[in-house]
Image 1: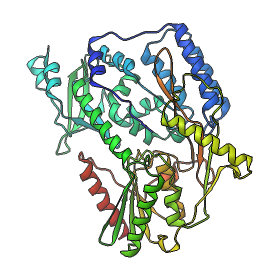
Image 2: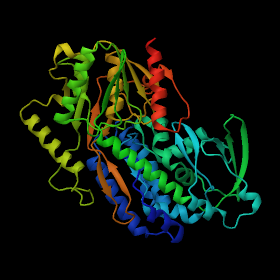
Image 3: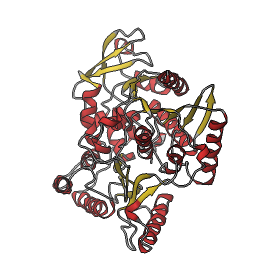
Image 4: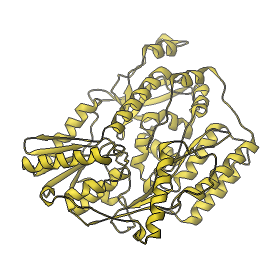
Length: 488
């Protein structure tokens, strides 16, 4: 699913020119009633990671919050805090243009642009349009204050990045409350979420950063308008990169004695063409006698479950877990759920399929077994899996399979998604008054693993790799190079 809202330049520019929208308490309450009804009726397992009592108590607290007049950012934060308690990363809220507008009209941002690479906060190069705007009203002394693009910020307003993320994290959903996935979600919108947690209350803000020689520097910036042109360009580039990944079913190459699968997304990794790709790839592995395989799942937020891929590692008739439509499609459902899109069509289709299986007594509580595969193509060599904070949903479950069933080693950062279970099957709810978009998930998936009291331990990499590399291709080369060393 998408974890970054679509933002156009015109909306961000309007944010600098227009006042923000407000809605009445009556409208707030109406939005909440719709939110509560849809959440309880369509979220598959609301108590998957927390007790039902805890969730219902959170809903009661949220209802009380909306008895008072709230700004749109305050409403966004209130919904975000409630949804984060469910601890399912698919179930979340995205800021809309009105929420962004409210942030921008306050004009209490730093005159620099920055974003996360993994868990490191990096300074971006400003666009010329922003440089001209940010110069207005500044003294020569202030204009001389700059941070070189590519520098790493380690502290803002006397708070470290982990300190700020612990505060920001309460507005973001993740499986099992994993902080790693919250880093991934806030990567391109770090300043927005930082602002949500704490509006700068001083005219001059301290920023501590590392220069290219890793020397620590401290600088104080005057606050003001955000660098909107730079932010927009960065978000646009991120959106294009996301779309390219979603359209790509995967890639496989061989390099000497190594084979490398790269999966940027599993959104398109299903169907006849994908099956052909898998068979062709594993035939090449067999022909070239590859015994060292790297599977790159960094930044893969999921899509289709990879039951078909796993049969090439474990063979036929192996239990991989369960997949259930916990809240199937009903005849009458909220008109505020978006129904004329592919996600709802999939929901309708899979609901019908599950009902047929139940009628024929073939459902078996959603149990999923691997299907037939040519025994000659089953891979038995070594495996290294690359994961990071963006490895989520079906990608994190695949990493779980490979680690526990195939003795794969993991390199990188801990996966953002669960190795055990989650809610999925994203449906879009648009609240009628605030226009905020909330994602509800009617399905539940479970891996083959038994529940544990500490579900984060299993995801810890065998080798942690962490370095700031701005270019994605160079970053991939860096990780592949370290993966090859793991076999040695």
